[in-house]
Amino acid sequence: MILRIWDVTFTVTDLARAADFFENVLELPLKYKYPTYVGFDCGGVEIGLVPGTPVREQECAPLVNFLVREVDKTWQCFAERGVKFLKEPHDTPWGGRVALFSDPDGNILQLVGIDWTEYFKACAP
Image (cartoon, rainbow, N blue to C red):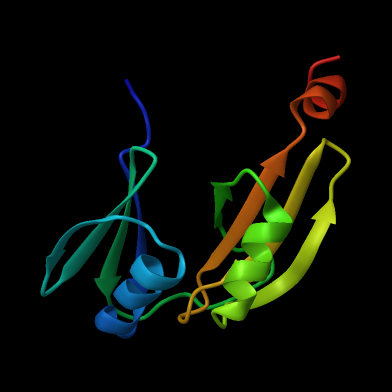
């Protein structure tokens, strides 16, 4: 049976450019780098990059949520680093504050901050 998520792997057109984005813009710790794979640690889940043809931005595309303490502060920092945001920080009905962005290849990512009191009121009444 499934134990947990081991990794999430993104297909990218330029492995070096994507690795630079995940390491230096998002500041994920580099685990290892090979000619056909780069891996980063994200709180115990590996984020992997492989060369190929990515899906690109599209409505309802799968996305990875990055849990952060302060969405607005992280959004501001990433925006200053040139991150392309698709939706600026906004509140959700379930107690979250989110901001949607993409990597240089159009893979969809999201910053998420959660007000746990509001979350449990909305999701576990």
